[in-house]
Length: 199
Image (cartoon, rainbow, N blue to C red; front, side, top):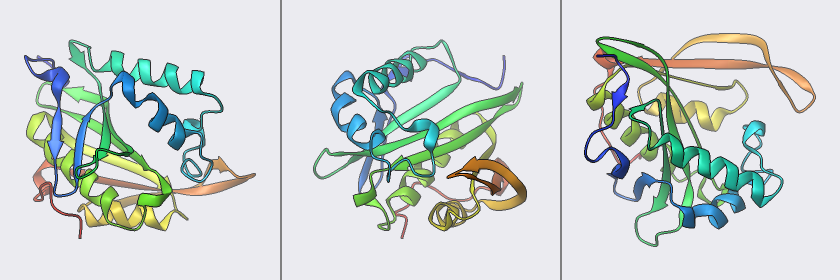
């Protein structure tokens, strides 16, 4: 037995609901709306590795994510963030196992949303739901990192109860410069939240 999540009867049918969002597994039908986000330089400005120039690149990424969901010992949970009222694909949130032990695993969390969805508390809502899910499963720690200048993402992490654990100086090459990276984390014993509204 390891700290990695094992696939069970419903492992391929993860669905989390919040007041405004549904977080669910990726589907083949997500290709077009996902590509609209990942081919948008504004949406991927702080995640240049996620930028997809053509739909074939997005399709390869989507197939990879769908394969991850089929793994017997699942290391990656990537969930579509869907508008609960309209069914519109707004973005995605991911939790990737980076280390494990018999009593739990350490996950890294990341997310992206289409720019039209920014500044509405939706990323916080999605992140809180993701944290509630993974801490109720097998996580003992969740970490996240972002460029220090990305104040919006830092606010999301702080509103989820994560604390800044460090600042990596000149750590990440971005937009022609070496930039500082802020590192955040939270332990299971520190986590007291749930899939809240993100207000």
